[in-house]
Length: 283
Image 1 (cartoon, one colour):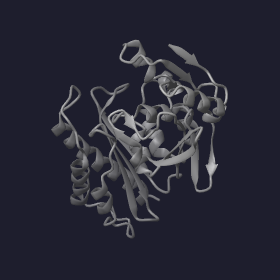
Image 2 (cartoon, helix red, strand yellow):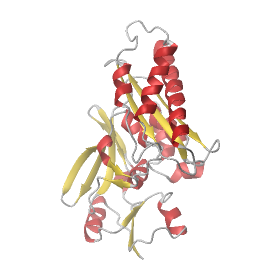
Image 3 (cartoon, one colour):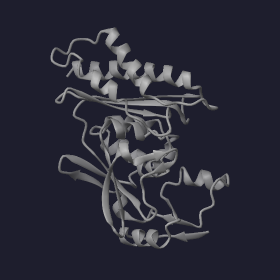
Image 4 (spheres, one colour):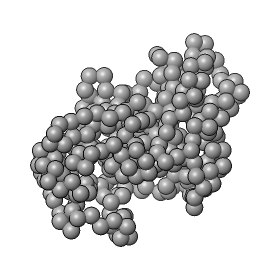
């Protein structure tokens, strides 16, 4: 196995163009598991840890551009107030050691339906910035996932960053696992309220071949009492949960049945809506 270690973004893109089968590695929290269990044996590894640009984030107009190499720990510490939903999801990722190494860029690169960062990116309308020696392009998070562990990346492209607006209102994330911590989600749900637009964004994880949005639930959210900020009636909360569950496309597997996932998503959606709405009511 060849090991490539570029020190600049230009060198990384050139290496990927010359070795399109090379697997990028940064934190290694997904790649090294596959290597250690001999589930994957790529011809080359492309180490991106020396590429300084990937570890930077900055405001870019109305959005934040967050480099693919920014770790979960830094997301929590440095961006938790501006991206609370993503920070909540980051806190559920593995152990402190994993959060010190793992990145959203790596989560995107793995394209797992169970990736914890994916539902908040969907709920917030994020874009994934990818690049190659041919140029750069932006892909809406909702269009980035092509199937289980498959993405819209071309063979010669690398993930440069993700672009996401700072939270205009309350955000929440919740997941169910087979234990309380350090666990792959049986299902997960992210919610982002936008009081200015009177809208809600949603993201469903681990309940379909790809992360999903709940479009009908988002449409239903427009009917909530945004103007009066009244407490939400229970029928409205229940209906929102039903619509989220109906948007899922789960399967039965070793972590849970399809029926359980739908039920759990309805519960998670109702809970996160109550939590976010109460935060909105309190200003």
